[in-house]
Image 1 (tube, rainbow, N blue to C red):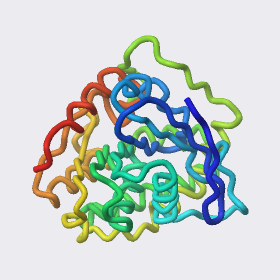
Image 2 (tube, rainbow, N blue to C red):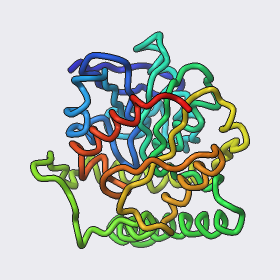
Image 3 (cartoon, one colour):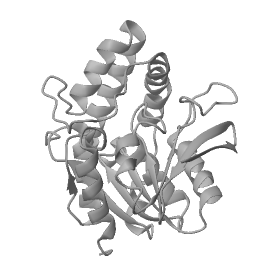
Image 4 (cartoon, rainbow, N blue to C red):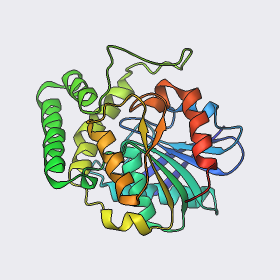
Length: 275
């Protein structure tokens, strides 16, 4: 594995590269940094050059000064990172907020992405108006809860909104532990304080997604409840594109709970011809 730091406007990005083959960038969910998908990457490096990174504001990707970061800025960061690492169109696995970033990337930087797997994008703009309003209010309520009562109750509310049931874990054995370290607590704080604001205020150009030139594959977790916010976003994206969502093992965090099976399914979907 090689690591590096890339200066981008307003920040410096930490990134990690491992494996051989076509470039595959994993755009993480929530507070996830470059190490969050270690187990998944281990099952992909035989077929892909896997790129992971700390989103600006998280872990080792320092901001020049604290400020809200719009999703389009996060997408520009990925654009700069891919431009520095490969001169060929790349594939992206975008998970949750990472998928929302990927949708901006294919809109703003045409030709850079060959395939985007958009796994349960947190993109309220994809939803019908009444449903969008309801879920935007839900996100704002979780952010207020964090500011008022702290991380623990806010995390409980997030798992409920995303259809995650921590009381009945379903996961592969032998996964790398990710304890709630001080750094991860800080990353969750940045996510809830700043990235929630970015998602709530996002202005995704939904109408342009059907004609980006990139192959966009909406994806859902097998166990994510049908009415969950994130699954509904993927379903509406699939309807917009005239397709059906690809189903992946696990739920919203299947890339973390089922890395072996998730990697096998990802390879399968990436190898499918464009329709």
